[in-house]
Length: 126
Image (cartoon, rainbow, N blue to C red; front, side, top):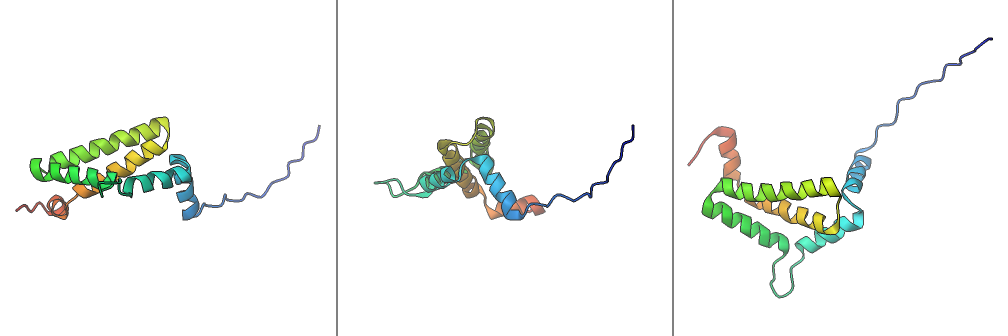
């Protein structure tokens, strides 16, 4: 028995571009139309109120932060966002879950104050 092995040239796999990686990440969260619908539903004003769900949650988190202190505002916003992210990761992204993620992310952003960042980095307080 005689075996001949022909070497095959080795090619490095092509590295995906930034946009391909971003698109793959978007596809893991949900379908693109779900993301668009959830984002629009979160930021468009509710009829007869003039405020969106995201701005209402942001005002609630800001009020908790200003009345009870920064840790409570961050805890309220962070725990709500963590719960939504866990639900999306465990059960997949639906329009309602993605909507809740957008609303809670905007609430967390509203809880952030630049003075807290300075305090965290430098230790300087009022």
